[in-house]
Structure formats: structure tokens, C-alpha cells
Length: 330
Length: 140
Image (cartoon, rainbow over all chains, first blue to last red; front, side, top):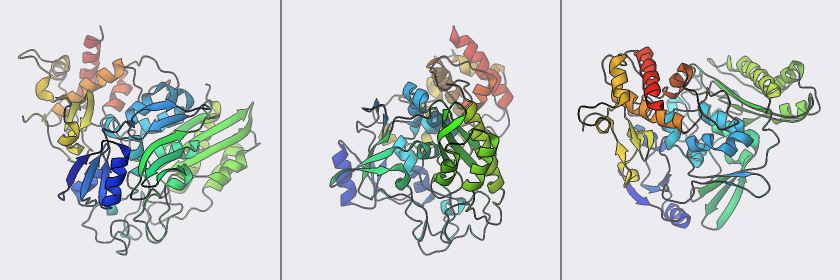
């Protein structure tokens, strides 16, 4: 691990000032990804700014019926929170499907969004080619072992996937991310928070280097009654998704008023399937409707040597998740 | 203190599990500076003299180990697990997530909640039995 300086932030503004002063500094929340990447030599921050002392750990109701998840609220507390469980059960499911109890106790909600999009080539500096780790060095995964890699929205520069479960559920719930920078606060729509790799895969999000996440603000949801998070993976617990699906339906009897659908394990960011959502609007909640939506969701898929299995897996997972969501009773 | 073990050093195996500020964490991914002022309990802090913690006794009685390297982490994790269940914290396999309420600690719940602790000797059946026994003893 590289040498670094350490300081505690005593207010959001001091954290922002420290970032503005040193762009190679990093904020430290739970550290479950950052400290690990520092041990690997992948991340080499000059300074760590501990934001755990900041008063950002609360989960509080928003006027109008939404819920504010404080930046440093722990994943485990978020999943166990009665309002999260009642209003956004799919979010609790997704969080609990990720990592282990120990890691969820450490990881913060903002940190979950900022964990690196990654693959094993990114994580291992013994491989020289990784555009995400070293811009311009190439991509070892495209011609390498690419079973876990992206099938949607990738670029010739990077085919890594975002590993978050929580972020997949959030993509379907459309929160905004409230951030503070040197010039004050701004709100980022969740759909715009994470980036596709394009020609700059070293940048995972649209959060600026001198910005601090304050909270994730969830709007009031009409999807609590019919939603489901389905994660498909190599073992039943404590493994990243090969494919995951966050599916939510607003039903009028058996007719779909509106739908939300997001996929994990398939792209550089949590993947919102908007065309599939639109196709479900006004349709009966039947297997035929779900199968048609699944086809649309995977229409643009591009596979590599080892990951073609993800396309039928994702389609079937979508049908299954929508079927379970439709059958759920609040 | 030599009880807490370094295993994978990357938060993947759980052998470094300690309870800090009342929560089980992977100490390998934690800077001591971040826990200044917190109470940290390691495996050394469970027994009172020769009187073992119920979870320690249960691991002995059910052969919840073979080589023993992962055992301090397993036991710390199990101790925290019992506390989490008492507080009604859900897991991925909890049947009713929407409503907060008591959790029934079934074998499936134990397996899911202990999945952050790997045992390469494969003592899992003994570990599940040990957690069940300790749960029964500490419930009343």
C-alpha cells in the first residue's frame, strides 16, 4: 500500500475543501472497496479524508412521501430500516443480496454507488493492459477470459461490469443523488450518475473530483406492492451477479399501468431497460408481455467469447422477476 | 493478541472478523484510526476466565472446525449474528421483508448469515449446528 496522509472531516465543507485542494485525495467511508484497491496498488490516493464523523448517517422521510438515505448510512441499516422495507422492499432485497453481513455493516450507501466498476484484469496490476486502471494501455479482457463481462453498452476500451446490487434497484426507483461541491449543492438524476465506458473508462461516474455525496433521495414510489430483485450467480450467497434484475410493476387489476426494469451484471453501469418498460405499459401482466419486454431489453446485446450465456440468462431472469413481482401481495 | 486471523486480506474470507462499535466487520479492510474510541471485541474478549461464551462451547461440542484457522472469525461472526437476529435484522432469505418483525433462525438463515465466513476444511454442518445450539441457549 502507498503512503498517504489521513485526516478527519469535521463538516461537509471541510471534506469538499480538502478534495478541491488535492485531486489525488479520496474520501473514506466504509472503505470496503477503496482500502482493498489500495492494497492491490490499483488506487493510490495521496490522502484519505475520513467522512465517517460527518452527520450524514440518518435515514429520514422527505416531504411528499419520499425517503432520504444519508450518504454514510450503512448498507445493513438501510436494508433493515422499516420505511425502506415497507416502501422500497426491492431496495432492501438488493442490498441483502450483495456482499456479506460484515461488508454490509461497513459499506455506506454513497460508497456503494462509488465502488469501482471492475473486472479481474482491472484488479490485478500483473496484467499491464487495462484502460480503466491505466488509460491507453488496452483491454486484456476483450481477448481474455470474459465470462463475467458486459453485454450491453460496452466499448472497445472496456467491457467491465458494475458489481453493485443496490444500484440496480436504485436505477429502477429513480432517486436523485444530492452532492456538495465548492460552489454549493447540486442534484444528479440517478440515471446520469454512473457512466458508460466510451473512450474514458477510467471515469466511472459523473461525480466531480471535488464533490461529496450528501444523500440519495428516493421519490415516493407506487411500486412497493409489486416489485422483485432477482440475482443469478455462481453460488447462492456472497458472489457477484452474473445477471440481476430489478423489476417493478404498478398494476391496475391485471393491467400494467407502468413498469420499471433495471439489470445488473451486464454493463458498465446499472442498466435501465426503458424500451422494455414502455412496451409493458397498458399490457396485461402475462408471460407473453414479459417475454416481449425481455427481448426488447436485450435487443442491443453484444457478447464476447465466454459470456454469450448471459443473453438468454438475462431474458429468463427478466421474465421470472416480472412474474414474481406481478404475483407479490403487499 | 494473536486470535484474530489474517486470511485473504481482501474482505472475502471473514477470518479477520471482529466486533467494532457493536457490529461485525472485516478488520482487514478497516483502518484502526477510523475506530478510535470504539469498543473492539476480538475472540480474546468473549470468555470470562475459564467460562467460555455459549458460542465457543457450541463450536467445541459440534466440531465446528477442523484446522481452526477460520474459527475466531466464525465465532465472532456467529456472536454478532445472534445479536442481529435478536434485533430483527432481515437477511436475503427472510420470508417477509416488507414488514419488520421477529426473525426465525432457520438453518437457511444461519447459512446465509454466515456466508461471509469461509471454512476451507468444510466444517459448515458443525458450524450451523453450533449456531443453532447457541441460539437456543441464548434466546431464553
